[in-house]
Amino acid sequence: MSNRQTSRRDRANAIRALSMDAVQKANSGHPGAPMGMADIAEVLWNDYLSFNPRNPQWLNRDRFVLSNGHGS
Image (cartoon, rainbow, N blue to C red; front, side, top):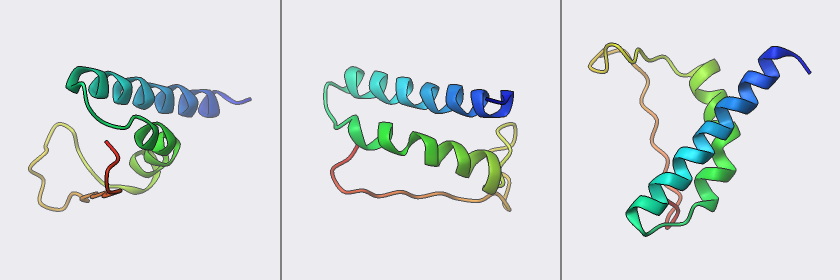
């Protein structure tokens, strides 16, 4: 397994952990949806979407909207 794959796995697992924490803190939600989408989110943000965390108001940034009904 390459370092890139390991890094991808680590980032996806971080998304999963943050999702669980958010649902727990809100005392509401369905953690399965964000946990299941973690790998897809990691690929989107690292390979396809254009954004700059240091400049969140950048006009040419990509916007991502996901609506999966009752999922958190």
